[in-house]
Length: 225
Image (cartoon, rainbow, N blue to C red):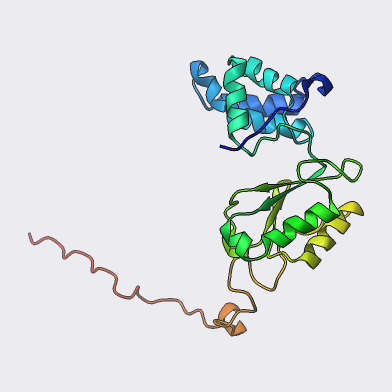
């Protein structure tokens, strides 16, 4: 479990759920029996974090506990255990840099160094509130290493040059395209396709109706009377 601290509570603003958050939490609550509504705590925390500019303040955590009839400490335990929940303010664009072995072997250390130079210290908000970054454990996109999750989306197969372009685009108010930043289709091998490249395979001309399904089991013989 990671070592995580709450942001200084003296700087926290009051929190109340807006209508959209209330509706979403209620939708999750309905999935469970009334006496088990605390089972909705993780989606409730996620919805709350979305409303609260990407992080969970102490008043927001208490609001979740009150909403689900839970003790405060139970909600705090969950929020501090899962690193998907941010306990300090984050930037409008929050960079989660994967530092686990596949990404590390493919250059994640260089990306972290670049984030330090371009954005600022890890865990601090910079750029007038626009940017923050942290290192995280595996995000499950190892074949597209090195990669970074920015808010809700994955940016994959990154280099210093492509990462700089992404940051500059966000700074200029643009929304860079998520996904891979090399020539490949999703998680296929890098480069253009090398098989099934005949376009006629996909234009319908080679599709012939089957008169019978090959190797299909034979229908049973009619019963003798």
